[in-house]
Amino acid sequence: MSYFSDKLAFITGGSSGIGLATANLLATRGCSLVLFARGQKMLDEACKTIKKNMEKTLSSVNAVSMDVTDNAEVQQKIKFAVEKFGIPDILINSAGVGTGDYFENISYEQFDKVMKINVYGTRNAISAVLPFMKQKGRGHIVNISSVAGLIGMFSYSLYSTTKYALVGFSECLRSELKRFNITVTLVCPPEVKTPFIEEEAKTLPPEARVVKNLAGLLTPEQASKAIVRGIRRKKFLVVPGIMAKSLLFWHRISNGLLTRMPADLIIKFTSRRLSKIN
Ligand SMILES: NC(=O)c1ccc[n+]([C@@H]2O[C@H](COP(=O)([O-])OP(=O)(O)OC[C@H]3O[C@@H](n4cnc5c(N)ncnc54)[C@H](OP(=O)(O)O)[C@@H]3O)[C@@H](O)[C@H]2O)c1
Image (cartoon, rainbow, N blue to C red; front, top):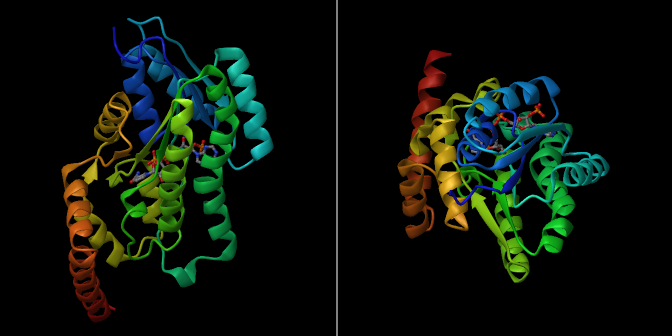
């Protein structure tokens, strides 16, 4: 019997990318799932794919359409899901959007929108699930931040702000919720090959593209393996991928010097090359 058999996980952003890959992997381990995202069509497709992986288990997968930025809707939909499917053992906050651009190009409205999805969205889902987990006497909350939540990077003035916020938020919650037998896991993946990076590429400056390569690229399946292992081991910090782990190691032991210096050089040479081309 697997650690995840007979467990129920709620996953925001479960219809795509990292959330979907994690849902798929949990399904093969016997975990029941409720997926949350805005688009019903993608939720239905995700459920269909996951059901195929559940053939040999007694678990189930369901989906609820929900916008994590709308707090009233989140409270109501999570309550509905709890009444219909049960109190979750695990909440994975994977709903999020990416954006990379020069700070001067980012409007107030865009800043506000991304903060509301990445930060408030996570806050809303946790505040809706928490009373139920406390009632159950245990739970596990998993927040998907990013390497960009641990190391600031060219063109990520908005994205990193949201992901750094999740790091502080998760550290505080870990400390507060331990006494209720609720574990918090913070996941900081490097770049992962999902629709997210296609969207981000539309505005990502070329200098940032070169710097991002320093942390490596993972498949959603690789990221999900690290996430599921981290949940199983009740780890606080999960950094998927060898390159991301070593980047973080050098960043920490040099107080940022060994990551800022090469990044600054790369940006300088890339900018010079670009100005010669243009
Ligand atoms: N891919 C990467 O390189 C990377 C690296 C580090 C961290 N991350 C983080 O990992 C998480 C998942 O990213 P991903 O790469 O898997 O992206 P993705 O494939 O684009 O999936 C994003 C998911 O979030 C949902 N979502 C977006 N806005 C939402 C909202 N307002 N309400 C409810 N659901 C919403 C999407 O569904 P709907 O649009 O239908 O709502 C979708 O299911 C994000 O938090 C991202 O910041 C990604």
